[in-house]
Image 1: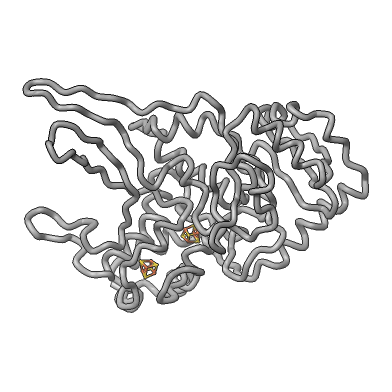
Image 2 (image 1 turned 45 degrees about the horizontal axis):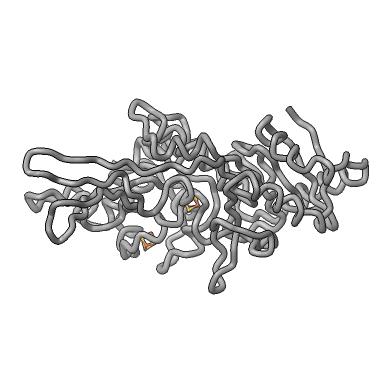
Length: 347
Ligand code: SF4
Ligand code: SF4
């Protein structure tokens, strides 16, 4: 379904108030100069005018630290207590198109041979209301990954700022359902408003300055596993994990049991993990198949641009630019991809 509506910005507060009565609402919120997605209670908390969140909103569905279950241990028995899921549907309001696209990859990983019901239960009860991206940063390259700052992939609604109003594209039935809570606030767009929406997309795409050819990367990686480029990239990496923690597609996790002092009860917790950490593949024998950063960075790139491609026909990057912006030693994934494209096959 493809229908469009208009809502005046001064009416958004009313819309959000009505959504809050029926849904658990998450939106970009400014805290200590950082924008991140949080559960909100009022419209005034929402930062509509933002570039992108520091942490991707994947953290709402695949939380940084999550209790899988609690347990009590008897002498010969164990009791398990599963976490309760919220009964309300969730809405992520204001998600950027690149971050919405990342769910295509996360869905494939978590809804495969092994079903990750912790993620899937939340994902299935979450509506995505996107906010198109009018001012991509110099680090953005979503168009090289087959997307645009106005992509509707995985979204239920897409809002575009066209001045005094938002142009609202209804992408799915679920999106239409959310509009229905406040139908009276929406009107049909005029020709002029349609033109403004189209112009906004053209202007946004012009602002993207990084353009890469990605098509040949998986094939090229087939041939350059032992190339010298991995040495120089690995020498720079300090293994801090920022790139993985801020990446909307990264999904590695670790699981630990936390026990009470009496060791009779505890909780099984999963937390995000990252592949550039020195102990990520350390075995109990002391052997590490990825002994230095060269091996770890190479694996990160192969995972994103070859293994996921080979296994799921998808890439582990949406071009959000967060890892480029935040890597403390300026490792730039687009530079790595350009090098991969240009390196001649070394054996
Ligand atoms: S953010 Fe940079 S230094 Fe830190 S692990 Fe990633 S590539 Fe290495
Ligand atoms: S690899 Fe970097 S640019 Fe690509 S999606 Fe992850 S954080 Fe964004």
